[in-house]
Image (cartoon, rainbow, N blue to C red):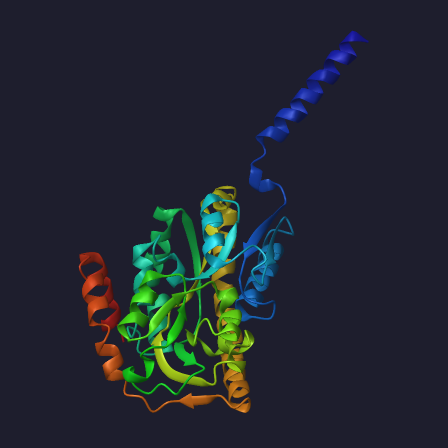
Length: 329
């Protein structure tokens, strides 16, 4: 009897030790993912697509649970939580993390990219890879870029065709000093405000205008208050998909490859959804009576950015990166 009891204890100990030896990545896990956009938005659709890819490749062991519509907070809040490891993945615009990762600021420089095609060439090439890799020095793992279209200025007061038309307008910007500097250089008054508060800002008269892409302009309902949309196309700042280093470290090398490949495939998927939504959004704004201003002289707008570029290019590395982007065909 004693021998059997002793063998039983040995067996139990062996089982316990064998479980302790199993890497954490062998256990099923759900990865909390933050996105401020609504459930039907292309970035949220892309994250759900990424979830399906990961579930397939890991036989359902790992899943991504997407908390859309700011369920986990505004972007600035969720970024801090992601860096701390409380949130596993985060889709955010690059302008929001510029204060944390200086090289990312370049992608939000005004009037730097000539077209969506120019932007995609940069993001899909060595420069894009370098910027994603640079996030590792600042507490994040960069997985992929998502499209965010061209950002333009819209307002509720008057058509904007020149810098003079912007004078005195209170324009909402992301919580980014670079974006505040840009609007200030154009002659308007920047108002930093979380994305989720912009509609209330319009409704209460706290702001006169904002700047964003076609999809955000319409899906948020901003077009119901801002009847003038000027195609300044001042930035093409993309979104970036981040992962916390804590969550990344919980994965085996094989699983890390699965996550990175799934993120890249979700990026291509997102671009298709984006093009469709962008066109539908513009048509919806036109049908609602929004005045689209296309007859603007962009040269004075670009010239007003001289001070911003002079400041940014004081850093030799940033200056070289800007030059590389400008020289890309």
